[in-house]
Image 1: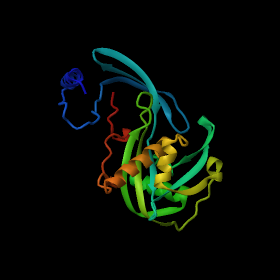
Image 2: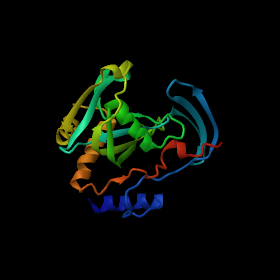
Image 3: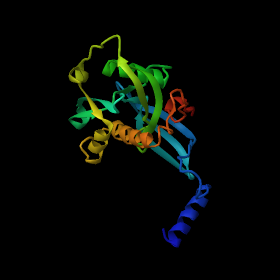
Length: 230
């Protein structure tokens, strides 16, 4: 890095009020909302219109108002990942994914939701759970956030769930973690939870799993924890 670029970086950090040596982290920021309304009431998620003040301007934005979701990277003792393939109509693809599901049960803890989805989509239970990663799917147009859990100590669930609609022909495959990473880097798989999950798992494994979070770790970035009061 040149002296000029170092100086520019320092100036940017000073303007933002943080040191150039500070750990890299997103900054929570809640602009004052003066009006908020649901402009499309959907079956699964809505479109919300907010008016808020920011940098001296009154701004209106519409975005997907989403309940959030969880995904599960189930890893067996041979370092194989449980993947499912199912049809996704918006992209006209049967894509490979991690088991996942919406957090649309009122008051349900994300961990409980993840355990439920692993049982329903993969007929599995796990004795060891950790937070592997979190991400916002499209911050400019949606408040959807996804928490990825690492599930280990796997066993068959007591009940096998009946699957319908897109889930009726789910294909299940156990794939070595390294092969999953190869598929991501070769751009053969596109699902974001799968892409982020397997890359995070590879990096976490290389660090002796020291980066994992507790299964019940608070999730302040989930919209359910926001104050939407206008």
